[in-house]
Length: 306
Image: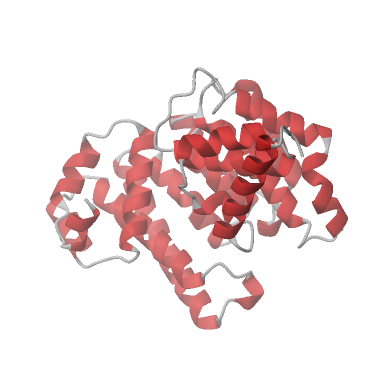
């Protein structure tokens, strides 16, 4: 389908999305295909003109603007972003917000435009109340939406004006209330990764605190509990999120020093590395290989834990 879009043939995507009723599936395809294109081609306007009553071209247009905005900005911290990049970032996010609002108006049941718009609220610095309002709009339409929780794990923390208290409150809510076997439980290790890397940015802790963070009993308990309710649970049904979920927990288990649990997840994915969470480390591929080899050697020597 990405090849079809690269050639300007949008009709198959339209028909496919129109029959994709599961919100997680629709979000997955919109997110991944807009990421594959990376820019907004001219044929999107042709699509909108040909299907004026459909929310889908506006939704996909908004998603394309979101992807291209963050691509223009880059992954650097705000103070290192150039003026030209910041200008493009802002312009494209404004256009994204316009298109996503139009899509939401045309299809008031679909959570996808609201989930995509969380990244807009984050990038435009619209504030935590607005970010959480959009998050609530997603949950009203589809509770435990993985894409929305992923966005909030980024936008709800201190680096974007939020707080870890809020994030950990949401994580506890997921643990207490989300269905067993659901991918949303990967939100728990994600929040812990965000807290872990923040030790290098914030003023509330030292490098020593970061080094020992994943060895603290409450962190170990929360991650193990989340794993038991998701990737380790007999109720877990691997879907689009499975590779990401298992990578998330394999890195978490590595940092916890639970080699058996780590290698079990790695064996289920094979050597397939997702950017998140391994890009939390300076050398993602090297770190994955190191984690695999360390765990394999430890288990061969009869050691389950570090």
